[in-house]
Image (cartoon, rainbow, N blue to C red; front, top):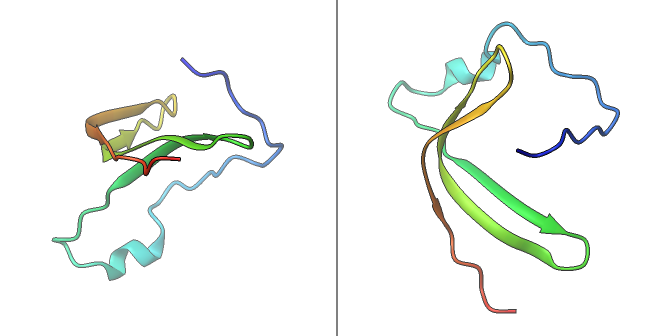
Length: 73
């Protein structure tokens, strides 16, 4: 479990999907890309997959994910 990272930004409080999503056709799927990085080492790990964010606790549930290979440093 990762500690909360507070950037001092307000939380989004959108009850409805963004209207631009309605412009996408029904067969379009979105892919989530997650990464870990640092100021000194750059990108250390990157993965892609599909997930959902539970509204009640903002917990990310991965349905499928796999690593992407990083080029050698």
